[in-house]
Structure formats: structure tokens, C-alpha cells
Image 1 (tube, rainbow, N blue to C red):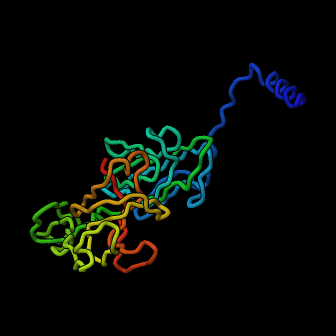
Image 2 (tube, rainbow, N blue to C red):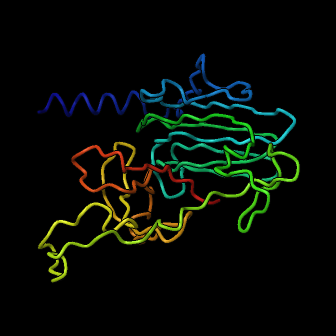
Image 3 (cartoon, one colour):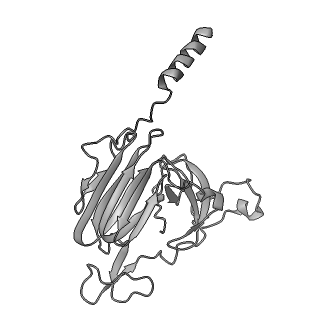
Length: 258
């Protein structure tokens, strides 16, 4: 025990008064560069963990509006993203995010910067530059759009790209079994399609941690604590038994508004 104390004292004395040594970010072959249309770019080592002290910058400047879509993200989470982060500068706007937030941006020119500190590492991100088409906007070309429209985009002359809506039958409760008529909580399993608005909030590893309700074609309502800090990676709809794979399941990545 005495020898360990002596060793600690010697090390402390040897380093006393020495300045902090700054470690420059480590360069990578895939760290930064210019990105073109339909190209995919990722953080270093993705899908393995990125390295510490990374500082990578990508530029996107095609001369016409495009969509920058983050397909996957898992960056060390922090309320202000002070440790590891992704920063996107586009046109006259900017956004900084971390955690498992999935974002989509529209603009003419972009600068994407990824930085990491010297501690916790995650898998990072995967992003793609895609054309600003009606399909990529999750819309359909129609003659007359009765609700949210995106203009003509790549639709035929006289048509407009219109946001897709759910069919009229969506959200209508399925058949309720006689056993459920007694309304005993926890007493009977629900039948498939009984509660079609029920959703599952899940992490990138498909771990369910909160529920929610689909209230429109764009919005899910859930408890505030479920999205406090690191929000869910995606929501799953139409799932009846989480232990089984079903064709009725639909997984939707979360695209949080700026």
C-alpha cells in the first residue's frame, strides 16, 4: 500500500506544472468530403463505433434543391449535444442534434459536421442526398390537392404533389370480442385490429419503451417523459404481438420538426 502511495506521489510530481496536451482530431479516409445526388455518407467506421476526437465535414452543393435524409443515427446523447454532435448548415438555417434523432432537411447547399469527444462512442449516422421528388416527399401527384400540397415538383403539367393521407377506414376500431364487453382491464387479450391507433415507441434496437396513439396522418400523441432527452428512433403501428413478426406491422422512422 505504501509503495502505491509513493508511486502516485512520484507521478503527480513528474506531471506537475506541465501544460495540457491537446490531441488533434484523427483524420479518416471516409471522414468528410463532397457528396453528390443519391450518394450515401456515414460517420467513420459506421456501423461500428466511431473513433474518439473525430472532426469530419461534408459539403453538398448541387445548384438545385435536394433532400438530405438521415437514415440512421446513434450519437452520444446530451441535452445540449455538448459532447458528440451532428451540425447541419443549410441555406440560411442551422441545426445541431445528437442521440437517436432522425432528421430530414431540404435546401440547395449543405455543410454537415460531425464531431466526437474523447469518451463515449456510438455507431454514428448514415445519411443520403436524394432528389426532391413527390415520391420522396411521401406524396402523390393529383389534379386537385384538398389538403397539404408541395407544388408541382416532378408531377405532370397541371398536377400537384399532395401529401398522402390514410384511407377512410384507418383508425376505425375493429371487431370487439364478447369477452371485452365486460371492460375488465388486463382480463382478456385484444383481437388484431381492435385498437389500430395504438403505436409502439421503440429504440434503434427495436426495444419498446412507451406507447402512443395515432391522432392524424402525421402526429402521434404520447407522454412527455417518453420524448424527454433522447427521443424514440421509430414508431411501430399494427403490431398485435411483439414476440411475433406480422405482415400488418408498419415501422415509421421519426422525423422531428425543426
